[in-house]
Length: 93
Length: 237
Image (tube, rainbow over the protein chains, first blue to last red):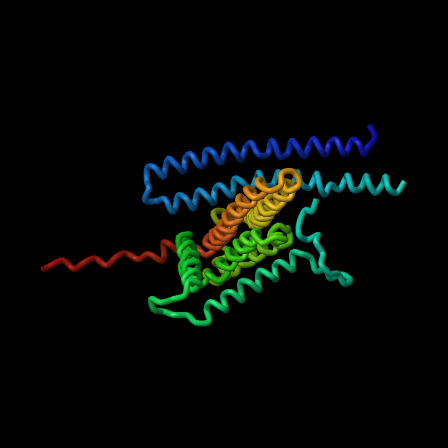
């Protein structure tokens, strides 16, 4: 396997695994967050504005980690420096 | 596959590039400023008011109430900065319904610029409220050992602000672009709706996080000195 093929294979597999594993943790955490928020809403409906706002802020923070994984995947697929380097080397030969 | 509106270049002269990000940003600014100017030309304080003035009042009082809920006293002084952040990101996402439009917040340059504005605003408001010494003292709370961690957290939450907004906007645009080539007509419309929803939520999140960071920097620390003992009522003779 020459280096170009190796780079391509590694990039493709890594990009797939990055997004798939990176979405597991945030999904579980967001599920727990919403469940707890619903419980506390049922117990104290008067504080619904505060609870809802805090819930959204917390969800955004949790979502950020999934977004980081997604951005890394996108970079590996579309703006891969190793692939670009290999392409320019192959084109130069 | 276009990764960001930075790559759509309308006009180029040497080093200066007029790309879609700049054009759409200026378009949004034009719409916001002209719209507000047209609405506020004839303000009325009575019961009769135009619906546009009503809309602007709802928006402004809503933002002010949110700023107050976060814990910032005198929300009026922060309304300009935080309100602008929210309105820009929200309108940038709303205009996705216009065909041929790419949200400028889908470019890392725009979101980094907005995050840098927040990074500069936090010390500005903190020093304005606490004074230079009081603000710098917040970095060595609770112990001086935390100084490098506080500094790192400043940088990392700015980075998180930028990447969160960029990732959300870019993923929405990219998913719609991909789906347009696979299943035109129905599914992209549903994803555009989802993109609108996430755009609004992300606008809210961005401005609320900025408000929380500013509130953390302007929180009064002299709680023990500020509270004085209540004067005891005179007992009836």
